[in-house]
Picture 1 (cartoon, rainbow, N blue to C red):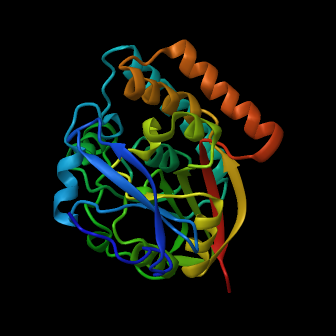
Picture 2 (cartoon, rainbow, N blue to C red):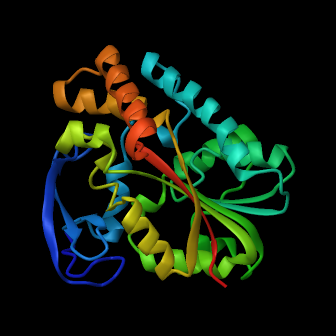
Length: 293
């Protein structure tokens, strides 16, 4: 395990223990989450060494790397994925050009972008997911950003959907993204929001903590600080309302051993309604940013 001695975002060395969570997917081990007292970023600490991280993704339950349709929950996930693709295309917009997706999974969204006219490139570390993208859509995804050999200032849009929380090198990747994006380009990042009502309800059982695969845990302040440090400014924040239902079902399973769909739907709906009426702290948030020139 690697002990984190300074904030991965701002390098400040003062942080507090926020919560302890268990990895219910692979190792069943317990992990501590620390919070920076300055930028409010929460991070898994200690965390697995970078060369060990891949072992924590080796589970049939990690369905974002597969197209598994067995069982009602996987079928529901695949349906939600299709609905999400349509809403994501609306956010990406009609501008056509060079588009890079970091963390492409099985390539569903990247393929949809290609169909509407984007020139696409994708990066996906997981071999199973890359093979699925190749088999299903003919997409040749790169294992790493370095292998993609993308020229600086060549990309019109760069997107990371539920990916930034996984990266072990936060400042390095956000600065690299700044270099690759052209001056009028758009950055789209979606991450879970630990200030949401469902997060506060489920506490250490909140599935979106997903230790140790999720190394970083953002709220609006820590994301704004992260992007500012990398030379970006946020121009819009949008909710991912469907996430509250999916995360609540996973959280119910963690807490009680059963997905309890009726209760999970109730919690997810309550979280969305509360966010809409009062504080806009949805279960997941989409940050749209541009370069600060």
